Length: 205
Image (cartoon, rainbow, N blue to C red):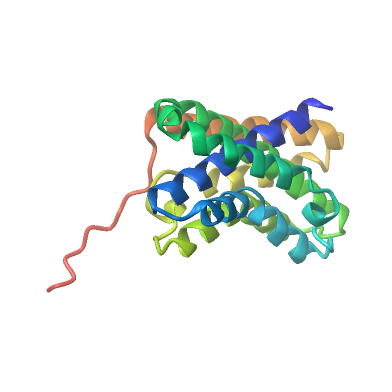
């Protein structure tokens, strides 16, 4: 197992915890919580694979991430009150996962001959936020990434850096540069509370 695999697993775990906690807060039954956690964890990757033509999606060919998500959900059932104390740690794992998924997805798009900065960036972003967007739509919430915090923009920047750096550098070096920038920016957003401004307009008038 490589360091990159560890980063991806940390991200899958963080996404699954996020989905499971949302399901518990919305008072879903056990099956509903499990489905929500799995969708949050692997939904973005499935969307990515369908878009780039990597079918059947990797998750269906190698169920490792599916199994990890399921195990994490079971653990959350018994520890969710305790996990509330460690939201910051979960966010750090989430940032690491976002960096890893951005790099992996950008690289997969390139391997499938999608040699365009726009396509590569969009594929990376869809992977990073796709699962959480589906999660929030299912529970009838405006997706979190549209309401709070700078999230998708960090993936956009990381993917663009990957695209332009791989032209001049070895592929694995570009991957780690993408990871460092995406994760670093996301951690800065968490630490310093960077957010996009919200338009405060009185619609009554």
